[in-house]
Image (cartoon, rainbow over the protein chains, first blue to last red):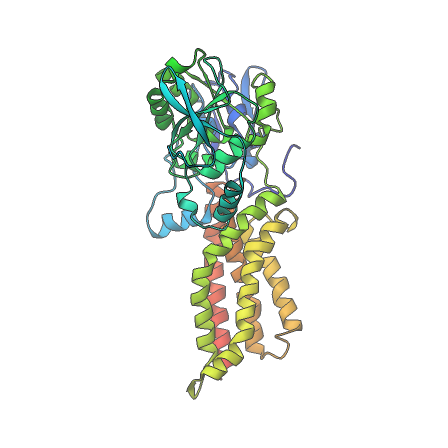
Amino acid sequence: MRTIVGLRYLKDVVILELDSEKCTGCGMCTQVCAHAVFAVNGKVAQILDRDGCMECGACSMNCPVDAVKVRAGVGCAWAIFNDWFNRKRVEGSEQ
Amino acid sequence: MDEKAAYFKGWMDTVVGKVPRISTHMGFRDQLGGCRVRWGVGRMHYTVPAGLYAIGEPDPESAVLVTANYKLSFDLLRRELSGRNLWLLVLETFGINVWCAAGKGTFGTQELIERIQTAQLARLVKHRTIVLPQLGGSGVAAHETKKATGFRVRYGPVRSRDLPEYLDNGMMASAEARRVRFTLRDRLVLTPVELVQAWKPSLIILAIIFFLSGLSRDGFNLDAAIFHGLTPSLVYLSALLMGSLVTPILLPWIPGRPFSLKGAQLGLLLALMFSLTLASGWSGASLVALFLMVPATAAYFAMNFTGCSTFTSLSGVQKEMRIALPVIILTITSGGIAWLVGHLL
């Protein structure tokens, strides 16, 4: 596995979807993802490592056919504190 | 443009007007400035003006690199570009680094499009390619930029130190250069700011510790406050360091995935060490307080490090906090009650 040894966050929490019907296999998601979550296998992209995703939103942002949906935001306790208690928004709307 | 800036080397005449030419040398002042912001000094105002810059003797065929206007990012980038002829397009991110600014949207599609237009990039260069740092991808839509400006966005490597290889390799990044890491060094440079930010609330906490230590059934006594408050203060400061310094350093090797759980384990170890040494003579109730409050304090500070890390997700940190935060509050409260009871009765 191509993972950072010991540096893995919680399992089964990430909200990330790939629509293989829409995907054209351009590979933009594989270029922008800093955690090698995607791979283009044959004609379309695949999610290889969902738990490695940090929900930065780069894949969805750069998908020209809108095939990737992710709950984009920042995994930062301080930002979430502010969101809970000061109602400052940290979360991008679902892309 | 501040002509007195150490990186300014003069003006270059181009078809779009004068463009500042910058040095790729990192001077003492640049190093010092970088060190200061790592400690939180003037960190929010460490900027360079947004706009177009020249490195070396660029011409209409030269590559265009895009970056943020945080001076630390700008310095790390130009340092890697010595001996090259390039254009540099700096976006206005209000002194925030590329990744965080992309997350906020200031290193974004709109700013990039406007900056390409105001710099008259289409007149300056013949080609139609711009190179962005990979981590800018969460703020920029490459296809929309292309549609609006004609420029094709290519994502370069994550780290500027991999840029020379990327540029020499026909703008292809290796799989390794596309991955973000979180090395010991990466973690270490981020801890000073955490400690500086914990300083102010810590003063209040220490004041409370000394005040409560001076209380007895006969009222408040300053000598007692100092005499009884020293060890608990030391305990608090050690728990703080355990959570915001030792946990980040040992992050990959501490069992468990939630940061708070990692911090709590080290906190438990710390409580054990105190109970065998400085706190060995404490009453039962005070020991209960020690074993409740130290792990909870370390867990809290460890959890705050999630925002510095390069691999935690919003969904993950929300889940961690929904469980950890109530536990931490409950543990600190019950620990505080146990301490007061042991102290006053």
